[in-house]
View (cartoon, rainbow, N blue to C red):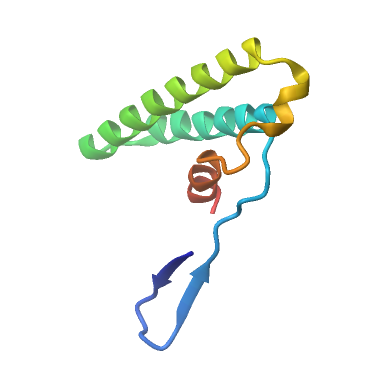
Amino acid sequence: MKTYYSQKKESVNVIEEDYTPISLMDSIEKTRMALDIAYAGFDNAVETDLIDSYIYEINSLQKRYKHLTDLAAAADPESEKDLYKHSPIRALVSHVFG
């Protein structure tokens, strides 16, 4: 469980992580969407630090996308249900999509 504190000390927002099972195909689709968002951010970035940040994010997402598509190509359809029960993409997607 993550706790985020706002500017006012009286209010505390608690955000719980989602650990529901996610299929391999859903993970691939969400990674593709996150990659599209990163490309859009890169296209609109003007500061050098922000541009560097998007470059690292895009490279990371491209490697993840390749890994997931390689898994999908090698996996049989029956075993897909058991993959990624606690997917790290959930943290990334919740960070990107809010």
